[in-house]
Image 1 (spheres, helix red, strand yellow):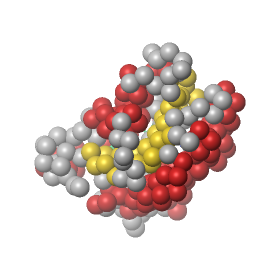
Image 2 (cartoon, rainbow, N blue to C red):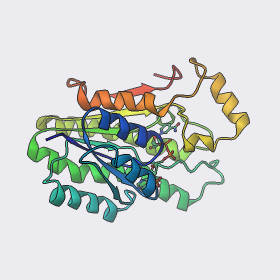
Image 3 (spheres, protein in one colour):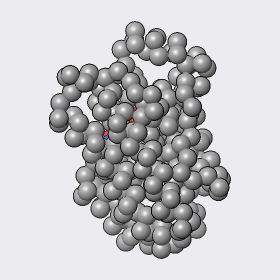
Length: 240
Ligand code: NAP
């Protein structure tokens, strides 16, 4: 039986590239989406034994639903969890609202903690698993108008450290992949003049591609058996 992986927010952007790459590496995919049903189902259809599953991972109910599906329909057989879903609600500090803060914390931070906590139970039973968290360069460098986003992403990398220490006893590896500026819908929203400024600060002189993040995630999912508690930077030389 091919190993099973769950990718949150796998319908588009970096998540879709990760799903495709893991599918090509021989995984059965459980592709979580919040609103991109058509994309997630289309992608799942390309890989035998794969499925798309709707859930809002910013909510406890959404994560509980994923846990139940894995337990009942897949006999708890989860090898890899990729916590990719996230939102960037950019706003200068003086403008940002408490509502934006809470939404960001729920989507970027609570989702990673709660889903990992729930699904680690399935991995602990099997004494095998890998959790790969998609954080961000911004969690290390900070960024204008991203005080909240940066906080949530820094928290993910700290969570990776603690979870790796706790779960090492059960042969579960936990790592973060921290992308720099990657060409997706998320970065398409950045104003052109600011984009030029970002590009001038990237040693490789271009934005990254979703596939370039996916390659690293697939390495951590299939190889890298002595890597845990690490943050792997994928940013064209900007940081790390
Ligand atoms: P994107 O193009 O905006 O896509 C966001 C993805 O997250 C979508 O698949 C979306 O699902 C999903 N999502 C958001 N909230 C969700 C929720 N509550 N429940 C389930 N799914 C949810 O973003 P991206 O650029 O691919 O980013 C993916 C991850 O990489 C994020 O964590 C982001 O912070 C991180 N990252 C991105 C960059 C970059 O430059 N692009 C850099 C560093 C880190 P639906 O479409 O189904 O709603």
